[in-house]
Length: 168
Image 1 (cartoon, helix red, strand yellow):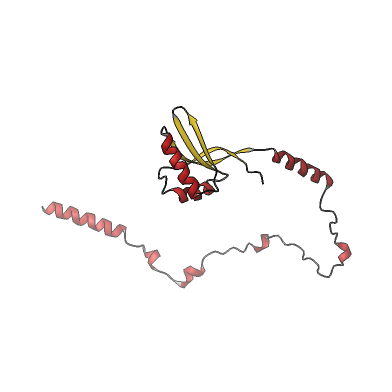
Image 2 (image 1 turned 45 degrees about the vertical axis):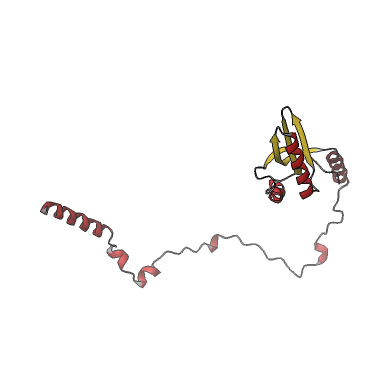
């Protein structure tokens, strides 16, 4: 028993001395704070000559023709190519995937009543009906509409799909 107490006392003494701050850390003199080395690196910074505000205006050259004719032709060709693009990768909301025709038709009517501005896509691949809603370029747009119809379809989710680009 006496040995066990001695052993515990030695362990406690070692732990307390290990956690004790050193003598150097305990003394905080103002001389130590001022002894920090501070390098002056301003000599290495580049210096630039100041612009002369009194310089004559004739010395400055102002651009006169900002648009290049070749650039305008290229931009027109890019615009005409972009007009022919009809599809893009985007997102749709998968509202229903199942085999019950009447259920999907009732759900479609409810969704059209809730968000009439969104286009719906009903496809049938035997034996399943798939109802997808909308054409969204970003997932955030799709999430906003999904929040509007989440009480109608609690298990609807967003899927990546090829979307139709609206012609405006």
